[in-house]
Image (tube, rainbow, N blue to C red):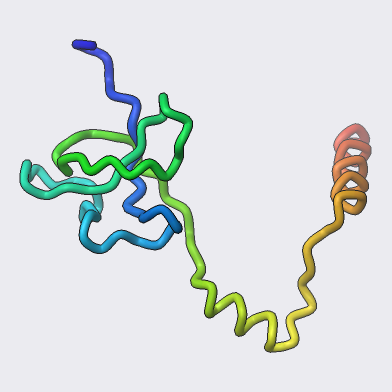
Length: 104
């Protein structure tokens, strides 16, 4: 596979999506061949694959803002009025967006 980039994404997370402190490439720009980070092959259809690869590799960085479960529980109990949409409400929203974009 010479000349073709490897299809990996750095994510730095364990299987539960928590930051893997032992296998995290600091800003994924280390030239060290000893430092390793957690990455996933895009060809295996497992976004949080647990392959430990050298931080010197140049892969895409997957950056997703994560919120701890404890913080979510606090927000729910703090009287937050946010609720998830039902499937029907979601379809209604999509239809509204489609209709609105046709008017512009």
